[in-house]
Each structure stands twice: as structure tokens, then as C-alpha cells.
Image (cartoon, rainbow, N blue to C red):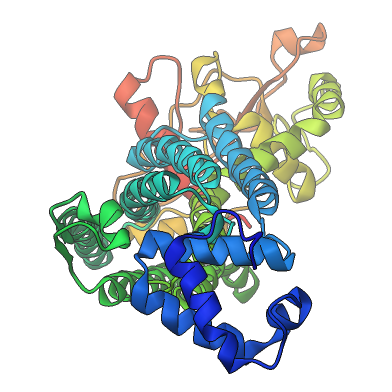
Length: 496
């Protein structure tokens, strides 16, 4: 017993006075360390006669004397955090690349996700600082001053977590506002947006005001400072429960709209599955909620926070992945379509032989030849990108125009057709107009007539994507170009 270096006097006194509660000899360290009854009596004595700082010192000294293994999950936490941060960075970069190549225009959902990603970096930095000050280790092995610093960083950690999670949800709501046009639905989304912002604001305010004085949050653990804190258990559980409820609600929002659209079942299931990755966020939030059990009352906060910290980091990563997945999907589709760009360019550059005005063999106009189906689909992603809006061509999307904007977005007749024409650029009507009949072939320059002079000398025919009611040319205004980019962006979400 005499070699218990570092054990306070109050602890030594308890060890000596408790020897009467064991049959082990005072010199038999192995027997004393394994005697649970003796350990229980010593613990009661120490808690009654020592300060909290001294209690931790006694626990650390006796653990070292008994040769108990020291728990240290810092390396594990660092590896887990590194993996999930890398994963969310990949999805974020894919989303930014989607915007960089102008597959879709920049929107408020992009701005807010950038803010969320920046603060996620701060969150990762806070996790690293937490590890330095004892997270993943038993609290009695952590120096008292480091415990203060650990709780200080944890205080900031709470606020960053609430803010990042809230901004991710804000970004997802802005995405819904971009791709779902229904007025009533948009009102519901805006109401959800307001509720989410209010929840974030309320949690951050409650976080700041939970202890009085504020420093009591990180100094009150030792029992040597005056102050008080609100019920931390109710505080943490209420926020987690409200977030889970909001996750479920936001998961149901797109499903309710997609199910009503005029799409075939396969496409509906595909689109719902894409948004359905939000289930991942909900499941992780539930697991994190379960990990909070007993956290507020634990006597070993540095080790308890390791489990909570892991699931908190996973939850934020899942949220960022869900928010970035639609745009990441667009970019991946863009890249896949360009894998065959050499072949497509070669096919597109081959001139067709001149034909007479009598017949093209299919009953169609002699000056036009239509490619549809899979080949046309492949051409779509290369030809109909916002970059092409700046070139000397006219492009359009093949859709069925109706007066109902929802039906436009969900139109079944969306297989594009690539037609070759020798005529001048065709300026079609605005997509946003009222329903009207398809333009005549004369409007497209496809009427039966002899081949043009340039064609006989090998001049390549001009290509446009033939549609009913939409086109864009070099002369289009910047605002109109932006509108059509946005329409293209919306249309792409349904092509799963």
C-alpha cells in the first residue's frame, strides 16, 4: 500500500480503513484489486471524504497500481472521422463540379450547402481538439485542466452541430423549392423552412443560456464553483427528437409530390429511391439519440462523448451526402455520357449523302432524318448542356407542353429526337406559354423540297434537337438563358 504514489491522503486513509472489509492481506495487491466488495467500500469512503479532483486522482492511482489497461479510443475516433470527412468531401466536390461545368445553375441550395460544408470543417477541427483534451479516454486519466478545456470545446461543439444540421436541412428545402412547382407544396416547404430555422435558433440560444454563469458549463464539474445549469438530459433529448421528426417530415415531402406526377411506376420508384437516401439520415439520427442515453449524468464524460461524437459526425456526413446526392448524380451522368464522346462526335460529323425530294424511305420528309431511342438519349447529355447555350446552335428539350407546369415536369413523352436540317436556325415558342398544337414541319424547315446547294458539295447538315415549344439561340437574353438552364435542371431530376 505504501507505493501508491499520486494517491491523495484522503484516498490512502480510505484504503487503510477499508481493509477490515476484506479477507485479503494488505500486501496482496492482486487479491485486493480483484475484491469487488473491498472496491465498493473504498469508493463509498472516497466519495464521502474527497473532492471530485481527489476522487479522480484516487481512481487513476489505484488503476495504475492494479495494472488495469488504459482505455484509449483516440486513434479509432481519428480514423473514423477521417473516413467520413473524406466521404462527405467527395459528394460536396461532385456537387461543386456539377455547377462548375454548368450542368445546372447555381441556387440558394448550393450557397447554403457551401456554408454547411465550411462549418463541417470547423466541426472536424473541434473533434480533433476534443481528442487532444481527452475524448476517448477515461476521465480519471485526464489532467483536471484538460477536462476544463474538453468541456469548453464541447460547448462550442453543440452549437456547431445544431447550426450545421439546420443549414443542411435549409439546403434540402431550397432544393425542393427549385424542382417542385406546386403552389401549395411550396407553401408547406416554406413553413418547414421557417420551423427548421426557428429550431436551430432556439437550440443555439438554449445552448448559450443553459448555464449561469456561462463558465459553469466547463468549470462546474469539480464542485468548487458556484452556478447552475438547466436539465441537460431534457435539453439534449428534445433537440434530437425534434430533429428526427423533422427528418421524417422532410422525407415524406418529395415522396408525396413524386407519387402524384404523371410518370410510369419505374421512374417514380427511381426518383423516390434517390430522395429516399434521406432514410439514412433518419436512421443515424435515431442511433445517435440512443447513444445519448445516460450521457448527461455520466461520471466518465470523456469516454461517453466518444460514442456520441462518432454518431454525431456520421449524422452530419449522412446529411451532407443526402443534400449533395442529386447534383452528384447529375455530374456522374454527365461524365458517363462523355466517356463515349469520341464515338458520338465521329458519328455526328459524318455527312449524309444528298437525297432526292421524292422519298426518304420512311414516309417522312426527305430533308430530315430522325434518330431516336437509346442513341438520342446518349446525345442528350452531350448536346443539351448549358454550355451549348453560348454556341451558334439552337437547342431544345423534347417534352409535351401543357398548361400544367407539374405535368410538364413529369411528361411521359420525353425521349429526345435528333433531326438533321439544312435550314436556318429555328426559333420555337416559349415553353411557358399556353398549350398549343405542335409546329408544322414548314416551321422547322422540314417541308418537302430539293436538297440545298451546299449539301451536294459535302457541307455538313446542321443539327438541332426538335421539340414542340422551346429553343434557345445566341441572341437570347441572359435572363432567358438562365430560365432555360433552370428548366433543364428540373427536367434532369426525373430522368432516373
